[in-house]
Image (cartoon, one colour):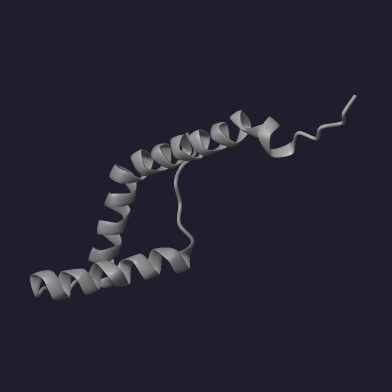
Length: 79
């Protein structure tokens, strides 16, 4: 499987969100490094499961569209 990576902007936004959550929920201030480590851990441990579920969801959606293809594009030619 392809390694899951984030853009620097997305990683930074997630780190800020982790810092905000820890501050509000636990009254704890996280350094940028610690927040980054948490994001990396979550990406490593949860990323593949979330990615695989997204692939399955897309597959099911596309299969539904393919199953209904005749109904969507069929043109009655009368011949």
